[in-house]
Length: 277
Image (cartoon, rainbow, N blue to C red; front, side, top):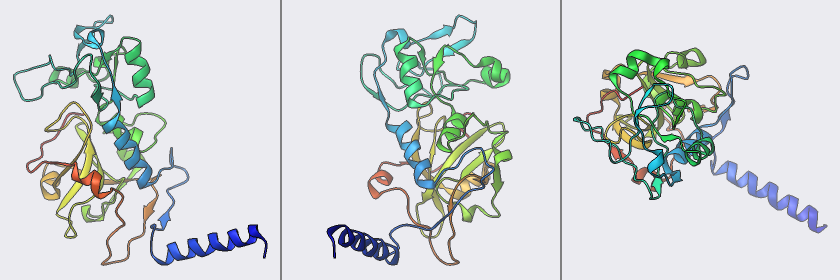
């Protein structure tokens, strides 16, 4: 037997062994007509990239006032300290972690870095005035990502789908108990979060990624909260049509996507509220 043939036989034996051990879930591809194709693992990886992205801003990336087009911008830097608890966080001159929230933002980490290097404002917090003005309140001179921009990026969508458009490319689940990593919980015209898995076998708490929600409003993060409390706020469970998903037999648990180390960093949110769109 040649060396190449021996290597091939070893590879086939290893693959067969891995399948028997259930090392990886069998995924059903998404709808080929969907705007993009993505797997749960890919969605979680993108979410983590936004959460842990490091960047160094400077004073020129701070803006609390109107941009050149007359749009009011408030960056979530440490000088942003409104009356409520939604204070800013990033520090100029230091390495910061996490792509900041920007109303109407759809940056990926690379486009965000380029914009910051060119002097753009580092994020732009939401406000009642911005929600009323909607797209007219989006600043072209600020960089970052909002909740729907973040979820759209995690789903590898080619363009942003806001909370009112996401249902058009998703299927509503029959029950929130069917949620799997990569699915979304959405409230049209309000907020959207990305399901990252179950905290417990009883499916009472979930892990989820979001930006624009408590307690760290203006940066993306992994959180865990009671499912019933989220549903009581009006969230609807959706599955993106282009999301590959695991066919889970009755009584079985879907494969975990997040590692134990990643889960350990999740923020506990016992009493969730609806975040910013």
